[in-house]
Length: 65
Image 1 (cartoon, rainbow, N blue to C red):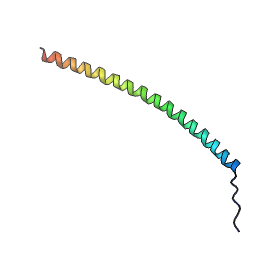
Image 2: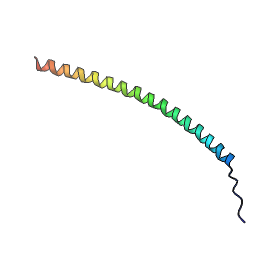
Image 3: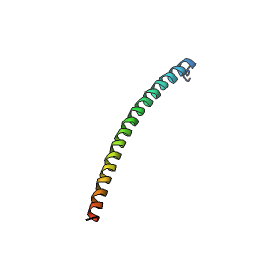
Image 4: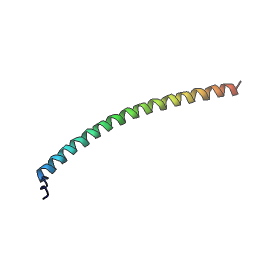
């Protein structure tokens, strides 16, 4: 004899609601991480652009001497 399956529509809805909460938490977490990564990327871009400008000015001043 097999045991009857205890899955019901109510339990399915409960699982769906739990999954929905998990997905929402995941989206919020990813959104926060994405904002942090974008801020870091902007900082690195600024550093690289500043360094490139300084190097170009140095090279130009050496050529013009």
